[in-house]
Length: 315
Image (cartoon, rainbow, N blue to C red):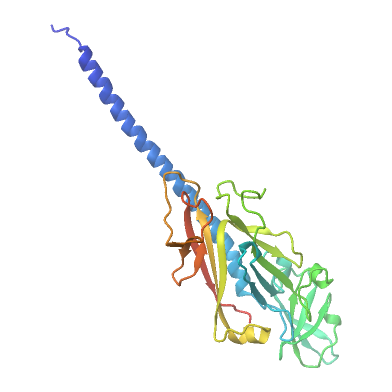
């Protein structure tokens, strides 16, 4: 019977082998876990971006919705500025996609008593009687009303009514000069995520939130995209003149919005390499040559250019 056990050398070799195997397994596990967390963060960011971009897309598609031909205030305005926080995209329409009261429309016909009869009611909120009335044949502004059946009209003419919020109806939030409409503004937050109390903790501290503001106030608004480094807007036109609504309706074919956003969170083991750089900073170039500036300390974050191209449907 052999009762000989392991020698000290054999025991040490065995322990070392076990430590090496466990160490390799641990490192592999940590790497997989880190990759999983990074992909989860990127996926969460992408979902947030989809929601925010869809809201922007809906607003752009409906510029001019419910706006009569004789309105003077522009249905779309892009204010460019070297200071990215002063850039703004202003849209006008009766529709606010986040407010059920403003969705839908009515069709009315003038009867022999010169009063309007509703022939089609497509309002989502049929309890909201505040409307803007437009003549169908030439899209001219007629009146605003809390009850369109009391408005005098031209016999046998057809009219379209667009619901509006009560704040627009009573004029406290009316953004039109001839008619009544909403003003929807997109701009970057005044402060970076370093100083903004509503910032997302994962954001590079030198990024901003893209906010959506409804109404005529120059303050407030809700974030639709977080961790935004830069953004710009261009237009596809048959003529560059967009100085009046008539020219916008004739010349504007599509709206392009470019937004440089952060994906995921800080990763000290990752180094981002921009497409190009110059003496004033580092940039990312879009497929069609638009340059968007990266923020300070961008190197250990992942960056992506979001682009949407929208053809307005209600010009």
